[in-house]
Length: 345
Image 1 (cartoon, rainbow, N blue to C red):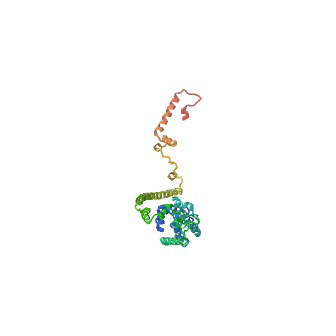
Image 2: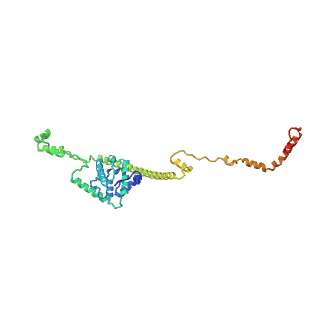
């Protein structure tokens, strides 16, 4: 069984708000940040729903608070992936740092696996989690302090005060107290007893406690205000991501239509591609006004036909011949040449 899920899967285009809403709804959680999946507990429970009986959920620490506890949960999850045949190596060293981008990509991958392998069966997330937490607590109580919990050093004040080590020399009592017991009478002892026992004062720490509680209240109010601002900014970012994805898909559709158009040399098509690829626009030349209004000159055949069809041209030709003939007759005759009238006749 291979995962066969790449970065172009649909889950990798889902915003973090939608991912958190899906995870909270499916597992009945109240996560507010994607960094909270760094403990791998929620991911283990998602795979427990996808592959029933394959995840040892009682080994998952749902109360993990430190990186070494996160690592233990990721080891459980990696063993499950190897067992079911999913070819995926978890980058544990990066995921346990609880960085936003790394955990967002990890949660997107978990959602992609859920979309692929979910059978639609009902999953009792709360019951399974409570049972796993109870068994984990029983295991912790049966074995003492588990390896996933930090060892707390045992206080030595009570035992050391009652049982000194061998060879150690016990310090003698102060001379003043010993002298008082030996030399003073019972009345002196009774009179000194009230002075030796300081009266208990409980009201002294009241002022620091009140100041600390006031400081804690101010810090809590500031923290809540910052959380509200982060939530509002997160919603704005999610909306911007949705708009970016929407317009990117529209531009991609336009690009595909331009690339598959049969007439790639169409001017409008090339203009749209220039806008998409941020290239300089090359507009086709527009026809000038002079070229449209100026008529074409007539051809030679049309001019000849116009001259031949004009009545003035036909009438003037005999008059011109008569004038030439009269001019030639006025010249002295040349015996060696014939006259123009003879040639014409």
